[in-house]
Image (cartoon, each protein chain N blue to C red):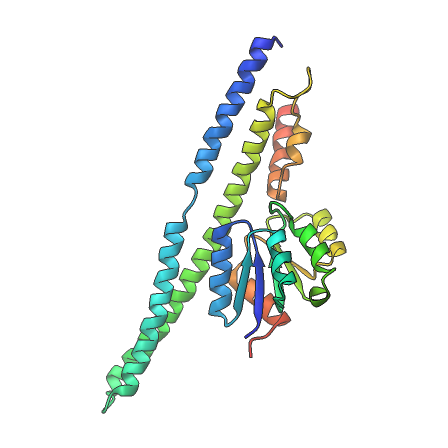
Length: 148
Length: 123
């Protein structure tokens, strides 16, 4: 490979690394998570408030009492589902960011000018960056497809 | 109230884990890598359970477990690894370092709480 071609490829890798880094940074959904957690906190507060209001009532109405109990049950269920959603989404985002980090590191290494003449970043170098078996499995599938 | 130490380099994961654990009645201490975890333990925090990620900067999960086991107050503290890694080799490495258990992401909140409650019930 000529020095010019190699320099161009390294430049492309450096640019791609920056592009993926931008993409990774845009995966940040902390505002959405913050809203989810504030909503669950608000639901807890409302649930407590309903109980307190009922306690303060001079003549508690059986109808209101039943509706209060139903509302508290429903609030509890929505809170549980929101917690579940936030936890699952947080893990999904974490995983996506880890994959993006892996691509960034690989591209940065491929763009490094320090690599000895003729040395290249290999697929086994790439495999060392993986953080999950899903990534390793996909790697193997691609290798089989391309080499088979 | 029992304390859980949560270590993960993802701020969102730390927040999410804290939210779930606090909702279940635990106090939560957090760190963004193993080094911060060791600092907390050295400062005298005595968690009932430690939840740690594996892939973290500065000091990773395996390094953290090895160093934590050298601190007298954390020698027998249950350490649960919560990670995207599911491979047997990593799991063996974590166990050899002193990990007590393993949860693979994505985990369900109930799975997490069930493990934590078994190790440290909220009274």
